[in-house]
Length: 123
Image (cartoon, rainbow, N blue to C red):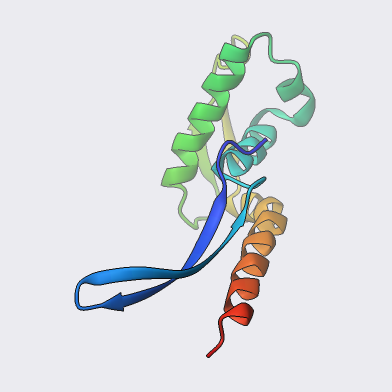
């Protein structure tokens, strides 16, 4: 699913310059994975799999990406998904806490990568 990778780096800053000392990455985890979770929550996994075209799926995931970037910790966040997959779909409300809970396994992967990097580079 991921179109990008998660990367974490240990960087040394010195008088306006920086040096990357070490890096750790997860090649199969990216922002698109979070967008996909949000899309599944908005329309359901079955509806997401039944998108009539790649264009519909792209529009839905693009809308989810934009909303994810605006996401703030409030009890619920609403946005319009109307007509993205089918006419009359209407707006959907996604509780932020539920989105965060669904994303937790992905976040745990990033924390594990960060911990591995720190453990290898303790001085």
